[in-house]
Length: 108
Image 1 (cartoon, helix red, strand yellow):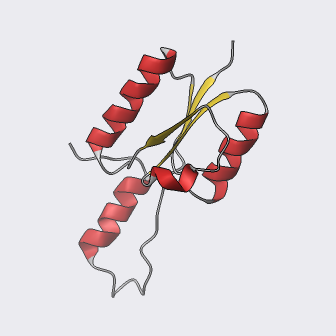
Image 2 (tube, rainbow, N blue to C red):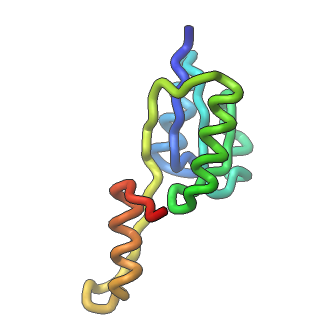
């Protein structure tokens, strides 16, 4: 039985590469991205919209996966982003939002 692997942040970079490689290796991969259109050419079992800063999209994606496969065996929480600029010029709320999202904290 193939492992069901949920990967966040698959639109580019490590998440996209990992999703493709695991899919080719025979795993059942669910690739997610804020904009699911960026996953169009990715060869995986399921593509789901998911924004890790939006709890409703997380619940929808997980619900779809459970409905389709009955479980999630592995989560690769790869999604992240960066706020760029000199430390003293970045608004505190924007920096805090980045830190919270990148460490997986979602305020509900």
